[in-house]
Image (cartoon, rainbow, N blue to C red; front, side, top):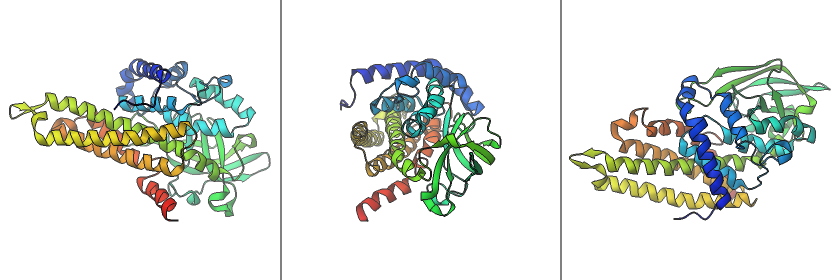
Length: 380
C-alpha cells in the first residue's frame, strides 16, 4: 500500500539521510563495532548535514522543523541501514525536547548550538542499578547547597554514556517526595567527581557506547537545573510518548527491511534442487510476516500523524511501542531461521539485526510496562 504520510519535502530529506549514511556511516560501521563506540567525526558530519536538532529553532542552529515526520524519516532510514550505534534518535527525539521545552534562554544559548553542530553529544541518565521504570526507586540525590547542587549517585545502561558532553540526570531533590521529589540536572563533561565506568559489553548494538556513570560530590551549578525543581516526574511523563514513538517507528521500519531482505534471499537460496521460495512453508512465512508488517505500518503511521499534530497520547504511544518492537523481535527470529545456518553468521545482516533489535522491547519502557500503562487506562 502506498503510504500517505509523507510529502515531497520528506522524500527529499529521506534521500539526504540515505546519502549521509552511505558516505559517513556504513563504510565505518564495522570499525565502530570493534571499537565499541562511534567516532566523534560522525556526529560532526551529522551536524554539518543538518541531521541534528531538527526541531531546534533556527536561531540556535537547528532545523526549525516542528513537523515530527522529519524525525520519523530519520528513524526509519537509520533502522533500515542497521546503524543503531550512532544514536541520533536519542539525541534529537529523547534529549532534545527537554532542552527546547524546559531550558531557559541562557541555557539554550549555552547548549543548543553545540547540540545542533554535533560538538555536544547528549545523554539522559534515569536508570539505576536498582531502579529502571520505577521512578520512586531512584536513589541518586542532589542536595541544595545554596549556590549549587551536590550530586551523589550512580546510573547504568546509559546510552551515549562514554561520548556524552551533556548528561540530563534524574536526581532526588526532596527525599520524602517519592516520584514527585525528582529534578533534572544537567551535568557537563569535566565536572569534578563525575566519572564514567565501563563501556558495557552488550550482546548487540556494539557500536553504541552504553556506560555506567558515577557522581561523587559533583557540584552542579544552580543554573544547570532543567525545568522546575521537583518537576522531573511531570517533565518525564510529557516526553516519554515521543521517546516510545521513535522506538516504534524504528522497529516497524526494521521489521519491514528484514522481510524485504529475506524475501530476496529465499528466492536465491536453493535446497533440493530448487529455490526455497517455492516451498509452501516458506511462502506462508513470508506472507504472514509481510501482512503483520503492513498492519503494523498502518497503525504506526497513524500514530506518527497524530504526534505531528500534537494529538498522540501516552496510551497509543505505548501500544505502538509494544506492538512494533515485539513484531521486530519476532520477525528477526523468523527471518534468521529462514536463512538457515547462514543466519547465525555475523557476516549476514540478519544476524546483527537479531542481536541489535533484541533491546527494543526493553529500553524506553519494557513491553510489560507498556501493557500496564494500557491496562490502567482501560480498567482504572
